[in-house]
Image 1 (spheres, rainbow, N blue to C red):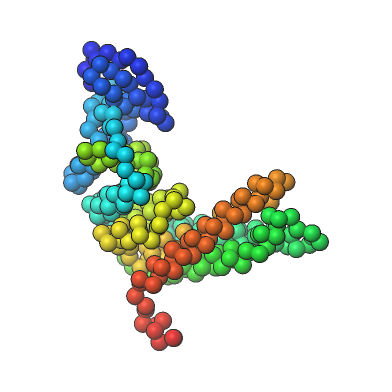
Image 2 (image 1 turned 120 degrees about the vertical axis):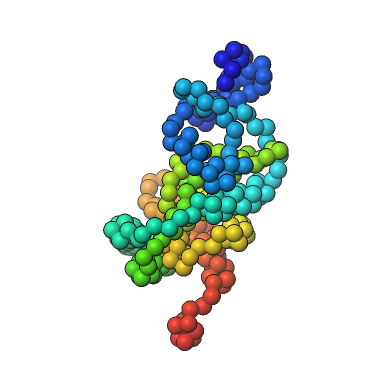
Amino acid sequence: MNKDRKVTNYSYLGSAKILETEEGKVVLKKKTDETSELYSYLKTRGFHQYLENKELTDEYEIYPFIEEVNIPAEQKAIDLMYILSMLHTKTTFYKEIDIDQDKEIYDRLHQKIIDLMRHYHDIQNQIEEKIYYSPSEYLLIRNISSIYYALDYSLKNLNDWYDEKSTKTKQRVVLLHNKIETDHILISNDIHLISWNHAKYDTPIYDFINFYKKEYLNFEMNSLFSIYSSKYNYTSDEMYLFFAILTIPDKITIKKEHYQNTYEIIKLIKYIEITNQFILKENQKRPVKEEQKLNE
């Protein structure tokens, strides 16, 4: 950055500082060695066209302020899926299966599912002991079977994932952006993916899971997943873990505020319904295994 550049005003956008200078706006962020190394790596993988140009000082990273084109959110989401699939394609590598790591993932998710089953059974028992139900309690009891179904389905996929992983020696790893959302894609003359401070290497499913959980009410997720999958398709074991994590419902508790209870329960039921439809449509696209055909 030109040290003689005069700053006339400033504002904040999240953790970023926007500086207005005589030469135009710039974005100021605290410099981190991790981000610099990450940008260097992504450039070697041919992903440089989606990175912001930046200048470095001893303490800061300085980016040009990008005035976005006003386009529909749905179009931004589509563009985001193309870029995400490209990120995963260009950063894929394979490593030896870490049995201990897989066991840790299995045990953690298995315990979470079992704890949720107990939690909702306890709530159900408490409600059913009452003579009169509040509207929120009645709503939960009417839909409790959907919660149990989601947990059962999650557990089945988790077991299938663990069984399949035990037959393999290699697993895919990608660079996860780890904070995929439409606010982090900037579209002007070029397209930039920003906010890389949570990036890490892991199985590719987590980027879309994070996006889904944040945006499932706002977009038609099957269409977006189809765009992503057309360029980067999950393996069968990845798909099992993907479904297992996606179908784990949130944990809600019954509070004294009936309005808040009703809101949380409606939100939970909506998530389960939308996710059931998402998975149903995705399963219709998947080939049927031979043992399944024989059993039909």
